[in-house]
Image 1: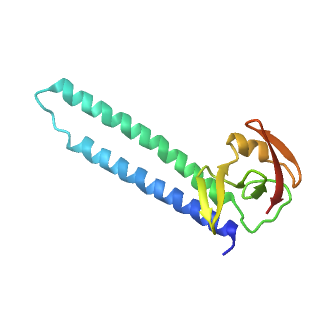
Image 2: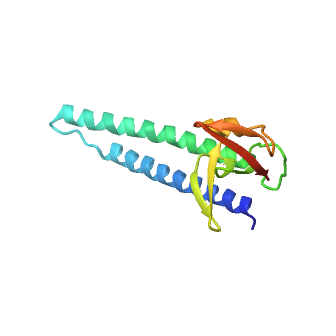
Image 3: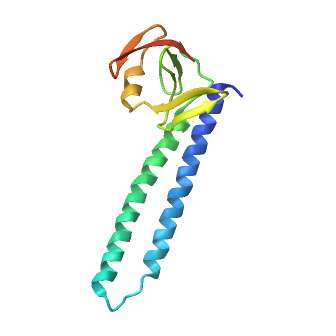
Length: 149
């Protein structure tokens, strides 16, 4: 398995883990909402239900976000080679290595650090469409692209 395949697999694992956590949270909140019984302290009961509803909405938004990540990963063809930075590219620069996919953060593969970033992240937007040898400025630093695969 090559580096891109390993990074892709790690991204899939991260998304699956997040999805499972959110689904468990939603199930837990749903169970709590269903088991809420009307108590003599009506206001307290209503406040508890309202808080659970807010948590359910928050979890629902997180679920949409994770599903979008899953869709983005499905669009990536890791076997595709290109000399222009695009979705699925592995970019080697003078400041670090980036995998343009989803926002999954820092990953360690074979003792090398990679950053899984999305195309909508600030640095992802700057890298998109660039070629080997080109540069860009990010946080006051010059970043030069050495390799794209």
